[in-house]
Amino acid sequence: MDDPAIDLTRRRITYLMLFRVGLVSFLLIAALASEVGTPAEDPVSAYMWRLLGLIVATYGLTIAYALVLKRTREPLRIAGFQVGTDLILTSVLIYLTGGVESSFVFVYLLIIVAASLLFGRGALLTAGVSIFGYVLIAFLAASSLPTRQVIRLLAVNTVALAATGLLAARLAVELRRAGERIASQGLRLRELEAVHKDVIQCLTSGLVTVARDGRVMTFNAAAGEITGISPSLAVGRHVGDVLPALVPLNQALTDDGSLRRGEIRQTMPDGNERTLGVSLSPLVDSSGVAIGRIVNFQDLTELRRMEAVVVRTEHLAGVGRLAAAIAHEIRNPLAAISGSVELLAQTVNRDGAKEAHELMAIVMREVERLNALISDLLNFARPSSPQRVQLDLGQAIAEMVQVFSHDKRFSGAHIELQAGESVMIDVDPAQLRQVVWNLVLNAAEASPPHTSIVVAITRQEEAGGKTWARLEVRDRGPGIAAENRTRIFEPFFSTKQSGTGLGLATVHRIIEHHHGRVEIESEVGVGTTFSVMLPLL
Image 1 (cartoon, rainbow, N blue to C red):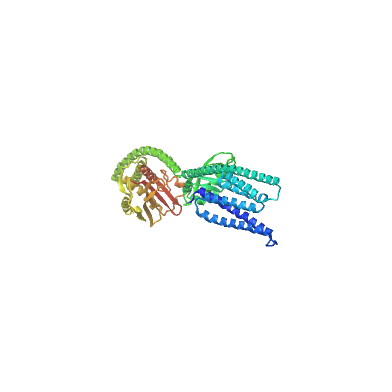
Image 2 (cartoon, rainbow, N blue to C red):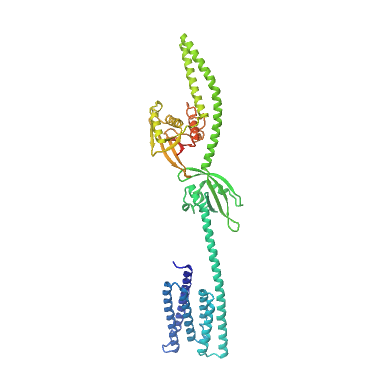
């Protein structure tokens, strides 16, 4: 690949050759036009033939220069030879067209300017050679003008050539310096532009610039990762097509330099909804006039989810403490009632009071039910510390499913296990059994008879690089209404008439103690999926 300076010199020489061809063509046309109707033996006609010979020689040299210029790596040598031959041809032209009186002296000026563009201060040398050639022609060529007039023409043209050489050399130097400054500034601008692009692309937050008409001008890589939209597809589109939820904030922003912050809920191309924290500010030009908007946003979905988990955990902790206190206060009287009723039943039984015995049996059954409820409440309020062991989640769940399938409460449903590769976790087996039992029991009670309950085990890798063991329990029940999903893990909240509302609350508490999380996806009329996320070993 050629040096940029060599390419620039070649371009300049090419332009000068094109200019020379144009000038010579003009002279050729003028010569032909003036010879129309002139006898061939006329002396003027002979002069014109010599002029045509010069023009043809110029064409030939131009073609030769063009062929050599493509192959040489030293174009300035070709340019120097070209300027020299141009001076010789111009001198011959002036000699043939009247010497000191010739109207083609101006061609010297063109050659001097051309030399200044190619060689800078070389214009002075070209001007000197031109003056020498013009003075020499004045002595060699005969003139019909008086000597005084010849001297005046010679002086005027010599001064013009010298002045042109000085000015052209000076302007060439200034032009070169200006070119160097422009090149330096252009390099700095390109470097700044590269840094600017790198900074924007390396930002971890989304950055979008929007024109006044709502058209997206820039869209960095982080914005593409957050929204799931390719930057190449986003640029040029209206912001309402890319981030519809942003339009109200964008319209409300004034042009007084104020900053507006807010949160928006944006539905992504994959159908998931994310919470974005957005800040908008005016985009202004160098004169301070607003030309658009700067939009900076971050994905707050995980942060908001964690905040909701913390709030729910604090709420559940308070409810648990209250439940533990109430359970203790209720259990002691229940024990006394149970013991007294047992003694009374024995006494009534001896007397043969059958009806009273049946009533006391009902009381005992209800006391046992209340005692079981209080035990569940205490398990939720004060769960035991996990006794963790390392186990294969798939193998453990397979054993549990086999046991559950023989339980009469699951007789109307088929449990289908989907487990792939081995997934090792650190968990309390008894508490894991309680979690799976509650989830599968809920699914069986919610599903229509003779339907399948799917228990699936997979690995899931999140954006941060953390890998989880994912346990899903899917049913084909009526689903959970949207207004109930935020309360589904609250104690004593249940959508079933006979439910205590402690099963899912206990599941949430156990998984939380194992540093995991529970997620729910439900669609009314389709079914519900509970997902338990546990960290892998």
